[in-house]
Structures are given as structure tokens and as C-alpha cells.
Length: 238
Image: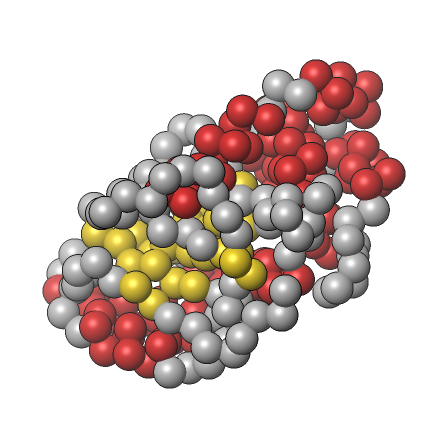
């Protein structure tokens, strides 16, 4: 499915003074709209708030950062590859200082990318066996080793896990057991209940407040959001 160029930002309420102006800027910025997915979860009249960061998440950066970006993503989605590169640049700039944290959650679109659910399982197996750093190393390898419109080479998953520091035999045992299927599906479904209708779809959280960003926003757009939020937080003394 070829996405359009329009993107949107849905804000359930203002995070802090001036955040609405950021929403307007993003809405008209123009970027790749996420590929549409279907969810088996019945549509609810009111969307749930996205689950806040917890001990089950894989986090790049400071888990206690004031600004948390929670991304729902598909490893075989071309736009997710673009956004993964963007977020790595963002974390290089803001992660070291502890100002921003990035959480990756699974939203594989099996209708378009049949191998995506299995890759998600592989990522969770790598994380379970090797920890947080191994999960992120595996994810970087999956996105980094394929072309923008190429599917992941499934024969290399065990190799990626080993490169991330995980024993291949243990990895294959985990993946073949299918024990991560339920976790992948749970994240997929919770994303749908929070309003995720395509990938990538991210949520910016400050405390209990949140705003959703659709699509593979450009680095300059994401950086602008973060710079503005940091400025507002600092000026408010938070």
C-alpha cells in the first residue's frame, strides 16, 4: 500500500503551554503517513491512553527522562526504517544527557509484511536472553542490514542475535517455542486501543500527559518538538 504524504498529530490535551502550536507545525510539516493496519480489537468510543513505560519495556536512554517517546513499529516497514534512523540521531543528541527516552513496542503488520510478527518474536527473544542492550543491538541490525524497500533476511535472525551477544542455540530454542507470540500480540492490540492505525506511530509522554505522532517524521521535525518541549519545561521550572 502506497502511503500518502499527509501526516497528523492527535493531542488529547495540552502537555504544557504552547504544545498546541507544536501540533499545528507537525500537522502541516508533511511526511510519510504510516501504512494502515487492521486490528482485531473492536473500536472503542474513547481511545485508551497508551501504557506508560514500565519494567517490561526495552528503553534506549534514561527510563526516568522527562520526555519519553514510545514507538509502535514494524521491522519490515520501510517508513519504520526511516524513523528508526531519525530516532537514533535524536538519542545521540538527547539520550546521553538523560533528557529523552525511547521505547520500542511491537506492531507487526502481517497483512503487508508476513514475516514481521516472527521478527518481533525474535527481537523479544533476544531481549529476554541478552537484556536491554541486546534487544536494541538486534533491532539496529535488522533495520540497518536491509534496504529501504527490502524485507528482512530471515535466515540471518540467529546471526543478528549472536552479534547482539546472545547464544544462537538458546535463541533458536526461544524462537521455535513460539512463547513470544502472545507478547507480540498483546503489544499490537494495546497499540490499537491507543489509536495506532499504522506504523510507525509514536507517543510523546511527559508525566501522565501524552500526544500521538503519526508517520515517519523527519529528524528536523522531531528535534523541533523536543527542543520546544525542553525549553518549556526549563522555563516552567519542571
